[in-house]
Length: 85
Figure: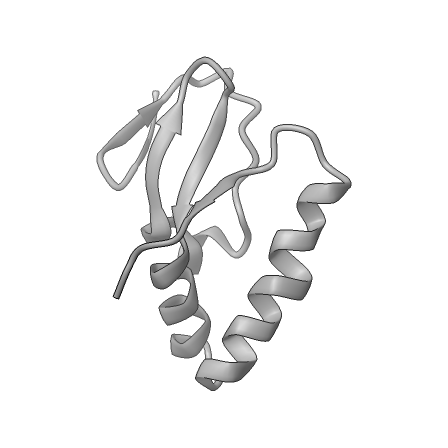
């Protein structure tokens, strides 16, 4: 079993993890067994990008351009959960 934030994934999972996982794993909030995909908290991802040195605006730009758009080209791409402030 693979454990991310207390969420257990099977060893044979093909779920895509965002990289660098050492920084972004803390944003994982759910694993969908049926779809074999991870769900990430957008708010936590933005905070992770900021911890890595980006401004708030740069973090949102990076997320929208380099993270979300990648899903257009990859199967089993993670889903993103947008929380209300």
